[in-house]
Length: 342
Image (cartoon, rainbow, N blue to C red; front, top):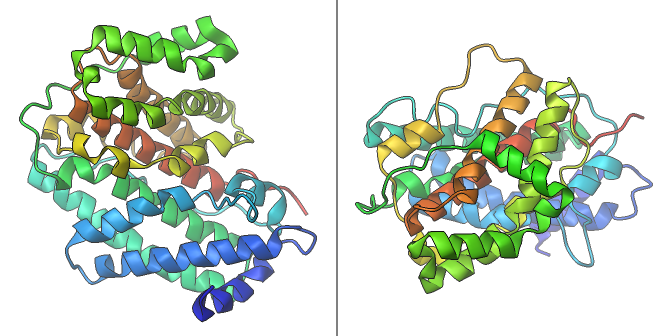
């Protein structure tokens, strides 16, 4: 560890329960994550070109779960038994809602950059507060802000990369059909990787490209994420927070677009309009959580029934799905998800 990481790790210790066995290991890992994120986010606060900064923030998705084989146990475990008692926090802004409110791609790109600049400034301020106050609430607020930055960075490829003229049309969302197929398979839905791949190979010629197999190795993990999103949506509809966010955080931990970079291209503005519409006004927090889970599932349905989707479309939908998961996880932890009483 660098001296800066050691200093920050010591400052963060007060946010954890004294009886948390992985207290020091987690503090060190969070310190490393936050310092890397601050370094990546600083150019955004100076209104420097966003492309490189967002690429660096997107690469931090794999670290955002705060998991190591012989170290921190994962952020879901930290929330459940590692942090001192904390109150619910005011919800932060949505990641994607409203980026597609205007039809021109230039305006959509400008709105994404504006949000990235604002969230970068907020994260840096919250990370500083987490070191000064050393409270669980401050630590959670900073981590939630980082998740939103990662979400914005993941979706940025749709607008920052040159538009693919062969991207094709966005397939219609088929949420109800997805839920019906999930019901038919029950718990086996999360293990339907081979069935899904066989169907895509049979129905979509684009999947014959070699890059798709590498892409699918990561995409196949989203089956269990979809099941978790459905449960979170149902719990929120009943006025409760879901208990286990391990799968949602895992969606970020397995996000590795560098492995299939050749598939990434920009998408037409109608895609952004459809995938990132404005949110309802004055939405209660749990209602917002329910809606964001539903929107993530709608996006996933486009991937599950992807008979005519181009390679650009696959990568774009996966990026939006990842960004939606980041937003859901951030909102959930801000509302007190995963925590326990004194």
